[in-house]
Amino acid sequence: MAGKENLKIITDKNQMRTWTRAMRSQGKTIALVPTMGFLHDGHLSLIEEAHKHTHLVVVSIYVNPSQFAPSEDLSTYPSDFDGDIRKLMAVPGGVDAVFHPYNLYDYGVESARCGNGVVSNGTAVVSCLEESGSGHETWVRVERLEKGMCGVRRPVFFRGVATIVAKLFNIVEPDVAVFGKKDYQQWRIIRRMVRDLDFSINIVGSEIMRDVDGLAMSSRNVGLSLEERQKALSINRSLSKAKSAAERGELNCKSLKSLVVDEIREAGGELDYVEIVEQESLEVVEQIKSPVVILIAAWFGKVRLIDNIEISI
Amino acid sequence: MAGKENLKIITDKNQMRTWTRAMRSQGKTIALVPTMGFLHDGHLSLIEEAHKHTHLVVVSIYVNPSQFAPSEDLSTYPSDFDGDIRKLMAVPGGVDAVFHPYNLYDYGVESARCGNGVVSNGTAVVSCLEESGSGHETWVRVERLEKGMCGVRRPVFFRGVATIVAKLFNIVEPDVAVFGKKDYQQWRIIRRMVRDLDFSINIVGSEIMRDVDGLAMSSRNVGLSLEERQKALSINRSLSKAKSAAERGELNCKSLKSLVVDEIREAGGELDYVEIVEQESLEVVEQIKSPVVILIAAWFGKVRLIDNIEISI
Image (tube, rainbow over all chains, first blue to last red; front, side):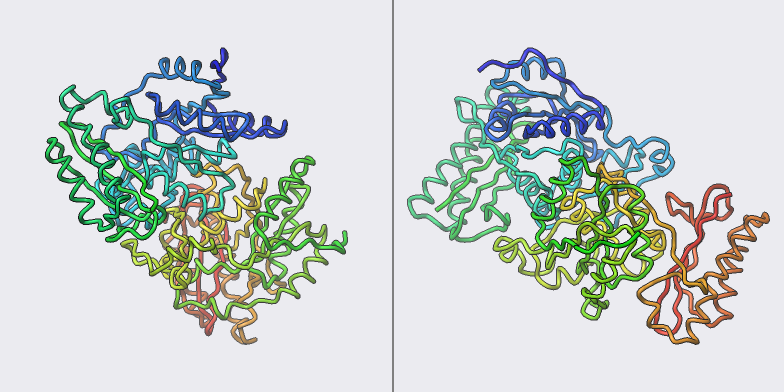
């Protein structure tokens, strides 16, 4: 399979919806693969997954300001739109449209008039979007699942993700949307949002892509020195060891976590968290009785990496 | 114009969406009129308004538990489904479908498993839904507009309204939705939600319906004694006086509010709030410079009534 020679790039949200509706009226089904650009093979695997489910595939490329705290790296977030387009033109099965909006929070005059100051919602959650003075004020929150793990250090993150995904769903109106299971908590949050708000969209989780050495693919991997990368291989190694141990009958989560913690610390990584949680509810478990997932975030040098492994016993 | 002799009643959300999609594929446009039933002429006027905008009209009848606090009157909320259906069959232009679901927060096994306990979101917002142990955990909040006025006494109300309306929009997928401007803050909140989340739905505000004596129509009016009803006429009278004063050049809101407050107090009403606010942002103004609305809530006996009047100078 080769990519497509022509790639439709749409920047206007109304044109995007018009395109989807025209395609649907011709009997076509549509998958959306939401991205923030700077694409790597992990993203491309999401597109290949999408092709299994629908006739057409739309990739969105949009760096969403509302999921970054003012202290985070919105302004330095990497982008390479030309490179992204080249990759999309070469991806097996191709891509039917790229949605690349300039600003999805610009509502014109009304927006500017209302955008005088930061909203206080009592929980001190403020993103780059509010700081910029946007009049946007509607937020989707998945209140249980957004707690814990990545939600602890990044209190605006999942609120911003759920909100922008709801917006993209309403603009693109896809039948299917594909998310990487590497961002496991995000994937579960989106599934829960779709259930709770009755979106008619099938959320597909795509398996983690790994380089040949086992490191989960991520835009952040380029920030690792060769030495740090060697050390970071302890993440996947420790997850595999814990899974094997569980499969051999070690169902005590304290013991399994120790395996992971020791392996990563010995390699020189600094753990943010290791949690063994129930796959649907993300509730911490002490003894494995139902399908779980081990979720990890760890620092190697200045790079924070996340990874996970599902265990279904 | 006469009503329709057959009325399609749909209770399943998937059947509802299937119906809409089938109609749309035949080139029909669809309006949704969301209600909690116990219909009066105010509701019926929304349906007549809807007919001006689309080929087909869907009325939803669903008492939404998530907009009631545990201390409020969910269990005693009035209902008369048979009476509602009779009224809908007689309404000019008719109704094409009634969506009457049993429980829009029942997500099956997964829901029950996750529903063990009330979510704490740091702001102590708990509705009848959480109290019932539902696994629902996704909330839509319009953070600026939900503050103040009716949001003060009812902190779960607008969160519940925005969330159920988002669900209904995703189930019914209408082109237009009609809301009464009597619930002015609610109408503005829904408009803002639609803008911020990019719903492709035109939100129409329908003018307040009044009985011949001037009282705004409401399900709650039946709770008024004859004497209380006489007193309650002071609401509309005071709003009209304030509007006339503004049109004659009195633009100071303190003075205009005094007119309203005095009139209602003299009649024996107990004010919950009187606010003069900018129409779009609902921000309190001190001097009228742009279109405003006077919003009132007041008690007459045990009945709390709301009303408003727009002033565009």
